[in-house]
Amino acid sequence: MTQDAKDKRAKTTMSTLPATRQRLADFATSDETVDQTLNRLLDTVQSIKVRARTAWENRKAAAQADPQAWQAGALQADMLAARAATRQAGRG
Image (cartoon, rainbow, N blue to C red; front, side, top):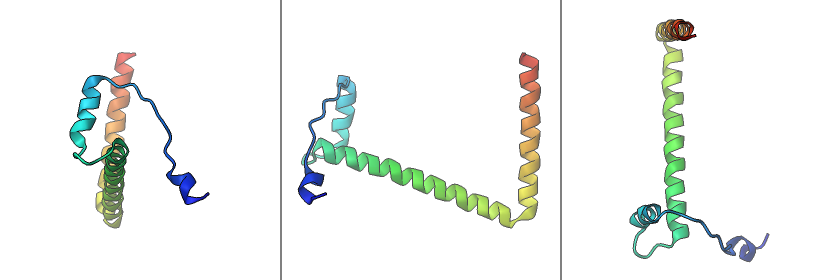
């Protein structure tokens, strides 16, 4: 694929509520296009997801490195699952 083909813009029409359009405009800087604003927002969301996943993996690795913490967590998870099952049985 040539560089021109990758950079070619497609015409897209999206229906939005006026309030939604205004919220998007509030995120944009004065010299920023809609495309740039959307890409910046999407990059931010992706970054947040990666940081959350990394934090989860770090917490999990720390817990696995401490067998007592891992065992306590497993016991608590079992207790919560049993409590949820009891509550569900009481509803049915």
